[in-house]
Length: 299
Image (cartoon, rainbow, N blue to C red; front, top):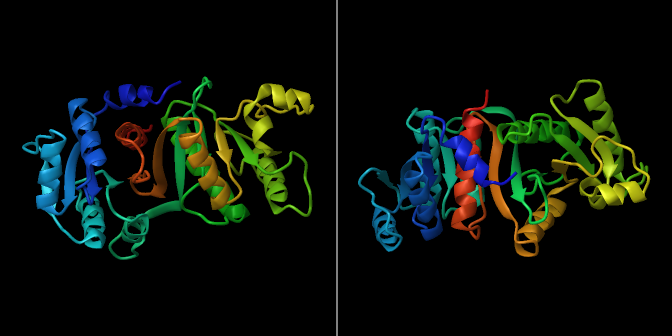
């Protein structure tokens, strides 16, 4: 399965509208150009209008069919993008050249932000060279040190994303340094609890197993060598990391060492928040848009 299949699926739906916060960024505008060309979505471009028009010319993006909202202050641009969703003018929010903290502050604002349905968490879908499936990693960007209850919600969010991407019953590996329960390692205790919670129906629409080390979560051969018998070991679709440090390093390792392609969203609010790194490519931003469109149309 490839991330390009998300675009194929997303273009079958009616075009939603995405509000881009601080859109004066060439890679973002290239992604917007491609999104328009593939009839993926319509857009509001929020930010400094002069800079947006200047950068749009440099990437050959025709702004005639787009709405440009002049708001030069980055923090206020994030707030305006969220407001467009609240007003019913946009269906999703996308990060442009704005600090993540500013965008999330606007999303989480109790009075002017987006309604929360569950804990907000970040999910990244990777197309890794040599693998025949997408690998979903959560949470590499939002929750610093989630407790057991939060990890259960993070899993449920990731399952929603994986199902929107076409994985009917995702296999979730709860990662830890080792594959046995060690009372001195909280990550292994949480993993065992989450596995039991899934078996008892407290986490739904997926298979959960852990603790599993990374090698025996994604490699059938590694799992076999260690004698691990599990419906998840070696076949994981979703990797739940124990904390943000682990997730962040794993995310960037896949991008920079493995040359993986990525689509990333924050879920748990009333609409998807497209949240990629400012260093991510145009292609990755386009895939992230497609993933958000699939989420919006999930049955």
